Length: 168
Figure 1 (cartoon, rainbow, N blue to C red):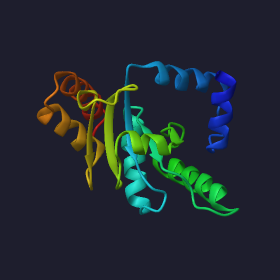
Figure 2: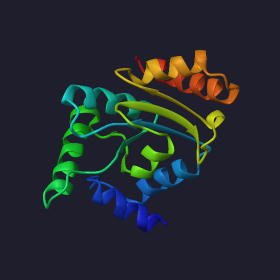
Figure 3: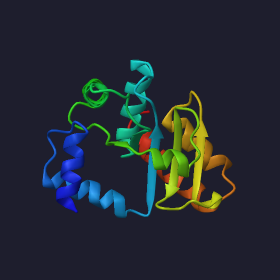
């Protein structure tokens, strides 16, 4: 499993990936909660950089639906992700995934969207989602204050505390 994750990280442009990095990814997969920022590489630089920086604070994953078709689509997406990570975060960039199934699972129809979820959960009480021009911190604050579900409120409040302590 760790070798597979290292290969995926390398394909996504994280050439600095080592087996130690895969331990972190492996742990995040097994963690009972997940945080995602759904984006498109066609979004403006400033927006992607800001969202990537915010995602890196709480180890949220940046998720894209796919990449442009054609021979250069994959390499252009990989280069774009590298540029965003370099501009936002230096040595501590967020993880990125190409994961169309997550777009379907959380019914993401426009980006950016922020989701916090019980890992693998698909029932309404297992996740919270907000779509639109909203930062990660604002999304967490909204979830913490307005969610009908105590688990979501508690997780969002916890992440918001981490986020706020980071200077946001």
